[in-house]
View 1 (tube, rainbow, N blue to C red):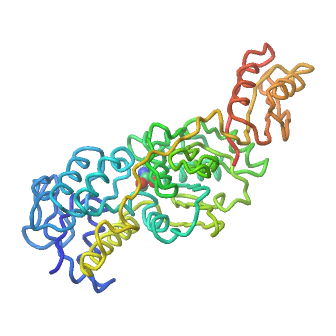
View 2 (view 1 turned 30 degrees about the horizontal axis):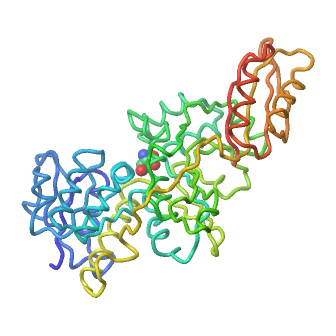
Length: 437
Ligand code: HSE
């Protein structure tokens, strides 16, 4: 056996990874990989996998620093002890393969600095999009391109919930409860439904697409708790479907043209979005993920597939293991490998949300009296918010419901107009505002 694997974690993805490594039939290089040790919390648990004898251990740190191990595969998830174990493995000269988007999005700088110093690889194909090979695509296959935008449906749980809300006309809480019962949503759904998981993933994708580090705190993040069945219904009538999108886009090239590499301005955000039914991402339904990349000269490219689950995620993990093993085996490529290592150190500059230029959808509940639509229109006009459509959609009790879609506007101007509208006597409430792609 040429290369010894230390596997940290034998949950869904860990077991899927071990299964591929044990089967050894999809690639000849698998014959040269050995599951040397497997770190678990509880050795006595019954497992269906036929692991080699005596590989299980509960001493995770001992595994991560074991001189015999070549590649540490971290699949325990969560922030700690995962971060510390990755850093200890690197400090011990091991290559690391991880599926841990939360650790990479928060501690990527620390981890990649340590890896570069030690001359080891940290591979993370499984951290974003499960089985979708988006990391390799951005790092290697699109190396000839200047990336303009990365727009993704990168969270399967929220896409499943929104898809069911759309098809059943059901409310968020109802579908979430059912999704939890069926195992499609976690008992604590916060990371998924509040957009945090998607924010971690778009921070990682943006870093690769735009060649700079991203501070997670700079990523604007809104989840789907506020999306109502009524908004899904209105959006549908207007020709849109609502998706939780993770978006990273280049806002300006001006400073780069002046030779200032560090001042490239990006917008990075996660929010529920009205997507035209004709847009390629509109038909990505259920637990599926998709990432639409726009670059020069490639134009549009969309990757579609399963974003979670044992098989798809293990497929990504094992492809990383094979990549590291292949490089170590040939030994002709100097470390750090220019396409596989992290080569950037500067932080990208992120534009504040007020500067975003986008279309908006908004729903108002107002008094049903003469001149209300006119007052709304005037208020928007005064703030340079140009309206594409404004319609009274019905009456609720004694309140009129008015739905507005804007042209491209500066978000700061739109928010100012909303503040003024909220203060109007004729306005009962602003029921919802959503961005439109
Ligand atoms: N919770 C994630 C999702 C799993 O729903 O997509 C994969 O990261």
